[in-house]
Image (cartoon, rainbow, N blue to C red; front, top):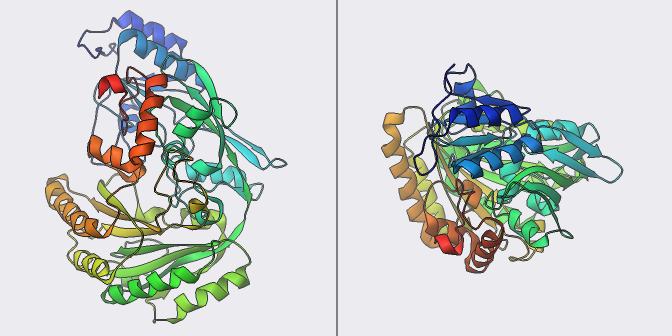
Length: 474
Protein backbone atom coordinates (compact mmCIF):
# COMPACT_ATOMS: atom_id res chain seq x y z
CA UNK A 1 0.00 0.00 0.00
CA UNK A 2 1.43 3.39 -1.00
CA UNK A 3 1.89 5.96 1.77
CA UNK A 4 -1.10 8.33 1.61
CA UNK A 5 -0.46 11.91 0.61
CA UNK A 6 -0.95 13.93 3.78
CA UNK A 7 -0.87 17.72 3.69
CA UNK A 8 -0.32 20.41 6.28
CA UNK A 9 -2.92 23.10 6.88
CA UNK A 10 -0.90 25.42 4.64
CA UNK A 11 -1.06 22.87 1.80
CA UNK A 12 2.47 21.50 1.98
CA UNK A 13 2.81 17.78 1.34
CA UNK A 14 4.09 15.86 4.39
CA UNK A 15 7.20 13.79 3.75
CA UNK A 16 6.16 10.08 3.70
CA UNK A 17 9.24 9.28 5.81
CA UNK A 18 7.80 11.43 8.60
CA UNK A 19 4.55 9.45 8.48
CA UNK A 20 6.48 6.18 8.64
CA UNK A 21 8.47 7.46 11.63
CA UNK A 22 5.23 8.51 13.33
CA UNK A 23 3.69 5.09 12.70
CA UNK A 24 6.63 3.37 14.38
CA UNK A 25 5.95 5.35 17.57
CA UNK A 26 2.38 4.05 17.81
CA UNK A 27 1.43 0.96 19.74
CA UNK A 28 -1.92 1.14 17.96
CA UNK A 29 -2.58 1.08 14.22
CA UNK A 30 -2.32 3.78 11.58
CA UNK A 31 -5.20 3.36 9.14
CA UNK A 32 -4.99 4.75 5.60
CA UNK A 33 -7.42 4.96 2.67
CA UNK A 34 -7.35 1.57 0.98
CA UNK A 35 -6.78 -0.39 4.20
CA UNK A 36 -9.41 -3.06 4.82
CA UNK A 37 -10.68 -1.33 7.96
CA UNK A 38 -10.60 2.25 6.62
CA UNK A 39 -14.27 2.42 5.59
CA UNK A 40 -15.44 1.21 8.99
CA UNK A 41 -13.01 3.48 10.83
CA UNK A 42 -14.20 6.63 9.03
CA UNK A 43 -17.90 5.96 9.62
CA UNK A 44 -19.69 7.56 12.56
CA UNK A 45 -23.21 7.37 13.98
CA UNK A 46 -24.69 10.20 11.88
CA UNK A 47 -24.94 8.90 8.32
CA UNK A 48 -25.14 12.46 6.99
CA UNK A 49 -21.45 12.86 7.79
CA UNK A 50 -19.38 11.33 4.98
CA UNK A 51 -15.75 12.41 5.26
CA UNK A 52 -12.40 10.99 4.26
CA UNK A 53 -9.47 11.52 6.63
CA UNK A 54 -5.93 11.20 5.26
CA UNK A 55 -4.90 8.97 8.16
CA UNK A 56 -6.62 7.58 11.25
CA UNK A 57 -4.50 6.76 14.31
CA UNK A 58 -6.24 4.04 16.34
CA UNK A 59 -4.73 4.77 19.76
CA UNK A 60 -4.50 2.15 22.50
CA UNK A 61 -2.96 4.23 25.30
CA UNK A 62 -2.21 7.79 26.36
CA UNK A 63 1.30 7.63 24.87
CA UNK A 64 -0.23 7.05 21.45
CA UNK A 65 -2.33 10.18 21.93
CA UNK A 66 0.75 12.18 22.91
CA UNK A 67 2.55 10.95 19.76
CA UNK A 68 -0.42 12.03 17.63
CA UNK A 69 -0.52 15.52 19.08
CA UNK A 70 3.24 15.97 18.72
CA UNK A 71 3.21 14.74 15.11
CA UNK A 72 0.33 17.03 14.19
CA UNK A 73 1.92 20.04 15.91
CA UNK A 74 5.31 19.50 14.30
CA UNK A 75 3.80 19.23 10.83
CA UNK A 76 0.92 21.72 11.12
CA UNK A 77 -1.73 19.04 10.50
CA UNK A 78 -5.40 19.55 11.26
CA UNK A 79 -6.77 17.01 13.75
CA UNK A 80 -10.14 15.60 14.71
CA UNK A 81 -10.67 13.55 17.86
CA UNK A 82 -12.95 10.52 17.80
CA UNK A 83 -14.16 8.55 20.80
CA UNK A 84 -17.69 7.12 20.55
CA UNK A 85 -18.46 8.96 17.31
CA UNK A 86 -22.08 9.52 18.39
CA UNK A 87 -22.09 13.32 18.19
CA UNK A 88 -24.75 14.64 15.81
CA UNK A 89 -22.49 17.39 14.41
CA UNK A 90 -19.95 14.83 13.23
CA UNK A 91 -16.94 16.74 14.56
CA UNK A 92 -15.10 13.51 15.35
CA UNK A 93 -14.16 13.04 11.69
CA UNK A 94 -12.83 15.35 8.97
CA UNK A 95 -11.69 15.44 5.36
CA UNK A 96 -7.93 15.21 5.12
CA UNK A 97 -5.69 15.55 8.14
CA UNK A 98 -5.37 13.20 11.08
CA UNK A 99 -8.12 11.59 13.13
CA UNK A 100 -7.00 10.71 16.65
CA UNK A 101 -9.22 7.71 17.31
CA UNK A 102 -9.67 6.77 20.98
CA UNK A 103 -12.25 4.04 20.37
CA UNK A 104 -9.74 1.30 21.17
CA UNK A 105 -9.06 2.68 24.64
CA UNK A 106 -11.49 0.74 26.82
CA UNK A 107 -9.79 -0.07 30.14
CA UNK A 108 -12.00 0.09 33.24
CA UNK A 109 -10.93 -0.02 36.91
CA UNK A 110 -13.75 -0.24 39.47
CA UNK A 111 -13.00 0.53 43.12
CA UNK A 112 -16.06 -0.91 44.87
CA UNK A 113 -14.85 0.18 48.30
CA UNK A 114 -14.40 3.83 47.34
CA UNK A 115 -17.35 3.74 44.90
CA UNK A 116 -15.33 5.11 42.00
CA UNK A 117 -14.42 3.98 38.50
CA UNK A 118 -11.60 4.97 36.15
CA UNK A 119 -12.79 4.64 32.56
CA UNK A 120 -10.84 5.23 29.35
CA UNK A 121 -12.26 7.53 26.71
CA UNK A 122 -13.08 4.91 24.06
CA UNK A 123 -15.84 3.28 26.10
CA UNK A 124 -19.51 3.43 25.21
CA UNK A 125 -22.09 3.69 27.98
CA UNK A 126 -22.98 0.04 27.55
CA UNK A 127 -19.38 -1.05 27.92
CA UNK A 128 -18.96 1.02 31.06
CA UNK A 129 -22.32 -0.09 32.50
CA UNK A 130 -21.46 -3.76 32.03
CA UNK A 131 -18.28 -3.33 34.06
CA UNK A 132 -19.82 -1.31 36.89
CA UNK A 133 -22.95 -3.48 37.10
CA UNK A 134 -20.71 -6.43 37.98
CA UNK A 135 -20.50 -4.64 41.35
CA UNK A 136 -24.11 -3.33 41.27
CA UNK A 137 -22.92 0.24 40.69
CA UNK A 138 -23.55 2.79 37.96
CA UNK A 139 -22.35 6.17 36.71
CA UNK A 140 -25.24 8.58 35.93
CA UNK A 141 -24.90 8.59 32.15
CA UNK A 142 -27.17 8.79 29.13
CA UNK A 143 -30.28 7.09 27.75
CA UNK A 144 -28.79 5.48 24.61
CA UNK A 145 -26.16 2.88 25.45
CA UNK A 146 -24.19 3.24 22.21
CA UNK A 147 -23.22 6.80 23.16
CA UNK A 148 -19.53 7.37 23.97
CA UNK A 149 -18.77 8.37 27.55
CA UNK A 150 -16.21 10.99 26.46
CA UNK A 151 -18.40 13.31 24.41
CA UNK A 152 -21.34 12.82 26.77
CA UNK A 153 -19.31 13.84 29.82
CA UNK A 154 -17.47 16.73 28.20
CA UNK A 155 -20.75 18.31 27.07
CA UNK A 156 -22.67 17.72 30.31
CA UNK A 157 -24.49 14.40 30.19
CA UNK A 158 -28.23 13.88 30.71
CA UNK A 159 -29.36 10.42 31.78
CA UNK A 160 -31.88 8.38 33.71
CA UNK A 161 -30.13 9.03 37.03
CA UNK A 162 -29.48 12.76 36.57
CA UNK A 163 -32.42 14.05 38.61
CA UNK A 164 -31.26 12.02 41.60
CA UNK A 165 -27.46 12.23 41.21
CA UNK A 166 -26.72 15.04 38.74
CA UNK A 167 -25.28 15.16 35.23
CA UNK A 168 -22.45 12.89 34.14
CA UNK A 169 -20.03 15.83 34.36
CA UNK A 170 -21.22 16.52 37.92
CA UNK A 171 -20.00 13.07 38.88
CA UNK A 172 -16.56 13.50 37.34
CA UNK A 173 -13.88 13.37 40.03
CA UNK A 174 -10.81 13.84 37.86
CA UNK A 175 -9.55 13.44 34.29
CA UNK A 176 -6.29 12.68 32.49
CA UNK A 177 -5.76 15.09 29.57
CA UNK A 178 -3.27 15.49 26.75
CA UNK A 179 -3.04 19.22 26.14
CA UNK A 180 -2.22 21.10 22.93
CA UNK A 181 1.52 20.88 23.60
CA UNK A 182 1.39 17.09 23.97
CA UNK A 183 1.81 17.23 27.75
CA UNK A 184 -0.18 14.89 30.04
CA UNK A 185 -1.98 16.85 32.77
CA UNK A 186 -4.47 15.93 35.47
CA UNK A 187 -7.57 17.98 36.22
CA UNK A 188 -9.65 17.81 39.39
CA UNK A 189 -11.04 20.11 42.06
CA UNK A 190 -7.57 20.18 43.64
CA UNK A 191 -5.33 20.08 40.56
CA UNK A 192 -5.72 22.44 37.58
CA UNK A 193 -9.12 23.34 38.96
CA UNK A 194 -9.94 25.91 36.27
CA UNK A 195 -9.32 23.30 33.57
CA UNK A 196 -11.50 20.91 35.55
CA UNK A 197 -14.25 23.53 35.51
CA UNK A 198 -13.91 23.88 31.73
CA UNK A 199 -14.02 20.22 30.75
CA UNK A 200 -17.32 19.78 32.61
CA UNK A 201 -19.39 21.14 29.73
CA UNK A 202 -16.78 22.85 27.55
CA UNK A 203 -16.28 19.89 25.24
CA UNK A 204 -12.92 18.99 23.69
CA UNK A 205 -11.67 22.55 23.39
CA UNK A 206 -8.82 22.31 25.89
CA UNK A 207 -7.24 18.95 25.22
CA UNK A 208 -7.91 15.27 24.68
CA UNK A 209 -9.32 13.56 27.77
CA UNK A 210 -7.95 10.03 27.74
CA UNK A 211 -9.52 8.74 30.98
CA UNK A 212 -12.19 9.79 33.46
CA UNK A 213 -12.63 9.04 37.15
CA UNK A 214 -16.31 8.96 38.14
CA UNK A 215 -18.36 8.67 41.30
CA UNK A 216 -20.43 5.47 41.45
CA UNK A 217 -23.87 4.85 42.97
CA UNK A 218 -25.39 1.54 44.08
CA UNK A 219 -28.06 0.47 41.60
CA UNK A 220 -29.11 -2.83 40.05
CA UNK A 221 -32.88 -2.88 39.46
CA UNK A 222 -35.20 -0.05 38.42
CA UNK A 223 -38.86 0.38 37.54
CA UNK A 224 -38.82 1.54 33.95
CA UNK A 225 -40.03 1.45 30.39
CA UNK A 226 -42.42 3.42 28.15
CA UNK A 227 -46.18 3.72 28.14
CA UNK A 228 -47.64 4.65 24.74
CA UNK A 229 -50.92 6.28 23.76
CA UNK A 230 -52.50 6.99 20.38
CA UNK A 231 -50.89 9.90 18.55
CA UNK A 232 -54.27 11.59 18.24
CA UNK A 233 -54.22 12.04 22.04
CA UNK A 234 -50.94 14.01 21.97
CA UNK A 235 -52.29 17.30 23.36
CA UNK A 236 -54.25 15.54 26.08
CA UNK A 237 -51.27 13.42 27.10
CA UNK A 238 -48.90 16.38 27.06
CA UNK A 239 -51.13 18.53 29.29
CA UNK A 240 -51.49 15.66 31.75
CA UNK A 241 -47.73 15.10 31.67
CA UNK A 242 -47.01 18.79 32.28
CA UNK A 243 -48.94 18.68 35.56
CA UNK A 244 -48.04 15.14 36.57
CA UNK A 245 -44.26 15.53 36.65
CA UNK A 246 -44.53 18.41 39.11
CA UNK A 247 -45.70 15.87 41.68
CA UNK A 248 -42.96 13.24 41.32
CA UNK A 249 -39.74 12.81 43.37
CA UNK A 250 -36.20 13.11 42.07
CA UNK A 251 -35.94 9.31 42.00
CA UNK A 252 -38.27 9.34 38.97
CA UNK A 253 -37.00 10.57 35.59
CA UNK A 254 -39.15 10.81 32.48
CA UNK A 255 -38.98 11.40 28.75
CA UNK A 256 -41.94 12.66 26.73
CA UNK A 257 -41.64 11.09 23.26
CA UNK A 258 -43.72 11.43 20.13
CA UNK A 259 -42.56 8.94 17.50
CA UNK A 260 -43.99 6.87 14.75
CA UNK A 261 -43.65 3.42 16.28
CA UNK A 262 -40.43 1.85 14.98
CA UNK A 263 -40.01 -1.89 14.42
CA UNK A 264 -38.38 -2.14 17.86
CA UNK A 265 -38.37 -5.54 19.58
CA UNK A 266 -40.09 -4.14 22.66
CA UNK A 267 -43.14 -2.93 20.65
CA UNK A 268 -45.94 -5.20 19.35
CA UNK A 269 -45.89 -5.60 15.55
CA UNK A 270 -49.51 -4.42 15.44
CA UNK A 271 -48.49 -0.83 16.20
CA UNK A 272 -45.37 -0.59 14.03
CA UNK A 273 -45.61 2.48 11.79
CA UNK A 274 -48.47 4.09 13.74
CA UNK A 275 -48.26 7.59 15.31
CA UNK A 276 -47.76 7.33 19.05
CA UNK A 277 -47.18 9.57 22.02
CA UNK A 278 -45.41 8.13 25.00
CA UNK A 279 -43.90 8.75 28.39
CA UNK A 280 -40.77 6.76 29.14
CA UNK A 281 -39.76 6.38 32.79
CA UNK A 282 -37.06 5.20 35.16
CA UNK A 283 -37.63 5.02 38.91
CA UNK A 284 -34.56 4.40 41.07
CA UNK A 285 -35.59 3.14 44.48
CA UNK A 286 -38.06 0.80 46.16
CA UNK A 287 -40.19 -0.78 43.41
CA UNK A 288 -43.43 -0.64 45.41
CA UNK A 289 -42.85 3.03 46.14
CA UNK A 290 -42.20 3.65 42.46
CA UNK A 291 -45.42 1.90 41.47
CA UNK A 292 -47.30 4.30 43.74
CA UNK A 293 -45.84 7.33 41.98
CA UNK A 294 -46.50 5.84 38.53
CA UNK A 295 -50.10 4.86 39.22
CA UNK A 296 -51.61 8.20 38.03
CA UNK A 297 -49.68 7.94 34.74
CA UNK A 298 -50.84 4.38 34.12
CA UNK A 299 -54.49 5.06 34.96
CA UNK A 300 -55.35 8.44 33.44
CA UNK A 301 -55.99 7.20 29.87
CA UNK A 302 -56.17 3.79 28.21
CA UNK A 303 -52.75 3.11 26.66
CA UNK A 304 -51.97 1.41 23.37
CA UNK A 305 -49.28 -0.50 25.25
CA UNK A 306 -47.86 -0.26 28.78
CA UNK A 307 -44.31 -1.63 29.04
CA UNK A 308 -43.42 -0.23 32.47
CA UNK A 309 -42.02 -3.00 34.65
CA UNK A 310 -39.18 -3.85 37.05
CA UNK A 311 -36.00 -4.51 35.07
CA UNK A 312 -32.23 -4.65 35.50
CA UNK A 313 -30.54 -1.28 35.12
CA UNK A 314 -28.63 -2.64 32.10
CA UNK A 315 -31.93 -3.42 30.39
CA UNK A 316 -33.21 0.10 31.06
CA UNK A 317 -30.02 1.56 29.58
CA UNK A 318 -30.29 -0.40 26.32
CA UNK A 319 -34.09 -0.33 25.86
CA UNK A 320 -34.13 2.81 23.70
CA UNK A 321 -31.21 1.88 21.46
CA UNK A 322 -33.52 0.88 18.55
CA UNK A 323 -34.86 4.46 18.54
CA UNK A 324 -31.42 5.88 17.59
CA UNK A 325 -29.66 3.36 15.33
CA UNK A 326 -26.46 4.28 13.47
CA UNK A 327 -26.27 5.17 9.80
CA UNK A 328 -29.39 7.30 9.20
CA UNK A 329 -29.23 10.84 7.86
CA UNK A 330 -29.65 12.76 11.11
CA UNK A 331 -30.33 16.40 11.95
CA UNK A 332 -31.19 17.70 15.44
CA UNK A 333 -32.35 20.95 16.96
CA UNK A 334 -32.92 21.54 20.67
CA UNK A 335 -34.25 24.14 23.09
CA UNK A 336 -34.48 24.57 26.87
CA UNK A 337 -37.87 25.26 28.42
CA UNK A 338 -39.00 26.39 31.85
CA UNK A 339 -42.64 25.58 31.12
CA UNK A 340 -44.90 24.47 28.25
CA UNK A 341 -47.85 26.77 27.66
CA UNK A 342 -50.99 25.55 25.91
CA UNK A 343 -49.84 27.50 22.85
CA UNK A 344 -46.48 25.71 22.81
CA UNK A 345 -48.23 22.35 23.15
CA UNK A 346 -50.47 23.24 20.21
CA UNK A 347 -47.43 24.05 18.08
CA UNK A 348 -45.80 20.76 19.04
CA UNK A 349 -48.92 18.85 18.11
CA UNK A 350 -49.24 20.65 14.78
CA UNK A 351 -45.68 19.92 13.70
CA UNK A 352 -45.73 16.32 14.94
CA UNK A 353 -48.81 15.81 12.77
CA UNK A 354 -46.96 17.16 9.72
CA UNK A 355 -43.69 15.25 10.27
CA UNK A 356 -41.91 14.61 6.96
CA UNK A 357 -40.11 11.39 7.98
CA UNK A 358 -41.62 8.46 9.90
CA UNK A 359 -38.22 7.93 11.53
CA UNK A 360 -38.15 11.38 13.17
CA UNK A 361 -39.28 11.97 16.71
CA UNK A 362 -39.68 14.57 19.40
CA UNK A 363 -38.02 13.90 22.75
CA UNK A 364 -38.34 15.98 25.91
CA UNK A 365 -36.05 15.25 28.85
CA UNK A 366 -37.39 16.15 32.27
CA UNK A 367 -34.68 18.04 34.16
CA UNK A 368 -34.61 19.55 37.66
CA UNK A 369 -33.72 17.71 40.84
CA UNK A 370 -29.98 17.36 41.46
CA UNK A 371 -29.19 19.13 38.17
CA UNK A 372 -30.47 22.36 39.74
CA UNK A 373 -28.54 21.87 42.98
CA UNK A 374 -25.33 23.08 41.30
CA UNK A 375 -24.97 26.75 40.42
CA UNK A 376 -25.16 27.99 36.83
CA UNK A 377 -21.48 28.99 36.89
CA UNK A 378 -20.01 26.13 38.94
CA UNK A 379 -19.31 24.12 35.76
CA UNK A 380 -19.00 25.12 32.12
CA UNK A 381 -22.37 23.43 31.56
CA UNK A 382 -25.05 26.03 32.25
CA UNK A 383 -28.87 26.48 32.01
CA UNK A 384 -29.32 24.37 35.14
CA UNK A 385 -32.50 26.21 36.07
CA UNK A 386 -34.36 24.84 33.02
CA UNK A 387 -37.05 22.26 33.68
CA UNK A 388 -36.90 20.60 30.26
CA UNK A 389 -34.69 20.10 27.22
CA UNK A 390 -36.59 19.45 23.96
CA UNK A 391 -34.94 17.70 21.01
CA UNK A 392 -36.34 17.53 17.49
CA UNK A 393 -34.48 14.41 16.36
CA UNK A 394 -34.99 14.08 12.62
CA UNK A 395 -33.85 10.93 10.80
CA UNK A 396 -34.31 9.56 7.30
CA UNK A 397 -32.68 7.15 4.87
CA UNK A 398 -32.33 8.91 1.50
CA UNK A 399 -29.77 11.74 1.32
CA UNK A 400 -31.72 13.21 -1.60
CA UNK A 401 -34.41 14.17 0.93
CA UNK A 402 -32.06 16.19 3.15
CA UNK A 403 -33.51 19.60 2.31
CA UNK A 404 -37.09 18.47 2.96
CA UNK A 405 -36.46 17.09 6.44
CA UNK A 406 -33.99 19.76 7.52
CA UNK A 407 -36.49 22.44 6.49
CA UNK A 408 -39.25 20.81 8.58
CA UNK A 409 -36.93 20.55 11.59
CA UNK A 410 -35.89 24.20 11.36
CA UNK A 411 -39.47 25.39 10.93
CA UNK A 412 -40.54 23.36 13.96
CA UNK A 413 -37.67 24.81 16.00
CA UNK A 414 -38.45 28.38 14.94
CA UNK A 415 -42.11 27.90 15.88
CA UNK A 416 -41.13 26.79 19.41
CA UNK A 417 -38.35 29.31 19.96
CA UNK A 418 -40.61 32.12 21.32
CA UNK A 419 -41.78 29.82 24.14
CA UNK A 420 -38.27 28.76 25.16
CA UNK A 421 -35.00 30.18 26.47
CA UNK A 422 -33.78 30.17 22.81
CA UNK A 423 -30.59 28.40 23.96
CA UNK A 424 -29.50 24.90 23.05
CA UNK A 425 -27.48 22.08 24.63
CA UNK A 426 -23.97 21.77 23.23
CA UNK A 427 -24.19 17.97 22.76
CA UNK A 428 -27.36 18.33 20.68
CA UNK A 429 -25.96 21.12 18.51
CA UNK A 430 -25.14 20.61 14.85
CA UNK A 431 -22.87 22.89 12.81
CA UNK A 432 -24.85 26.04 13.54
CA UNK A 433 -22.10 28.65 13.83
CA UNK A 434 -20.34 30.68 16.52
CA UNK A 435 -23.42 32.50 17.81
CA UNK A 436 -25.15 29.22 18.64
CA UNK A 437 -22.08 28.02 20.55
CA UNK A 438 -21.92 31.26 22.54
CA UNK A 439 -25.61 31.05 23.37
CA UNK A 440 -25.22 27.43 24.49
CA UNK A 441 -22.86 28.59 27.26
CA UNK A 442 -24.33 31.94 28.19
CA UNK A 443 -22.34 35.18 28.27
CA UNK A 444 -20.56 34.71 31.62
CA UNK A 445 -19.49 31.11 31.08
CA UNK A 446 -18.46 31.73 27.48
CA UNK A 447 -16.15 34.59 28.47
CA UNK A 448 -14.54 32.36 31.09
CA UNK A 449 -14.14 29.56 28.56
CA UNK A 450 -12.38 31.92 26.14
CA UNK A 451 -9.87 32.81 28.86
CA UNK A 452 -9.31 29.11 29.50
CA UNK A 453 -8.82 28.53 25.79
CA UNK A 454 -6.24 31.33 25.72
CA UNK A 455 -4.28 29.50 28.41
CA UNK A 456 -4.50 25.89 27.21
CA UNK A 457 -4.91 26.20 23.44
CA UNK A 458 -4.00 29.72 22.25
CA UNK A 459 -3.46 28.62 18.62
CA UNK A 460 -6.81 26.79 18.49
CA UNK A 461 -5.15 23.45 17.74
CA UNK A 462 -8.33 21.72 18.96
CA UNK A 463 -10.89 23.38 16.72
CA UNK A 464 -12.77 20.49 15.10
CA UNK A 465 -15.50 20.77 17.75
CA UNK A 466 -18.14 23.19 18.97
CA UNK A 467 -15.34 25.67 18.95
CA UNK A 468 -14.50 28.20 21.61
CA UNK A 469 -12.06 30.49 19.84
CA UNK A 470 -9.16 32.09 21.73
CA UNK A 471 -9.15 35.90 21.72
CA UNK A 472 -6.51 36.21 19.01
CA UNK A 473 -8.61 33.98 16.70
CA UNK A 474 -12.04 35.59 17.17
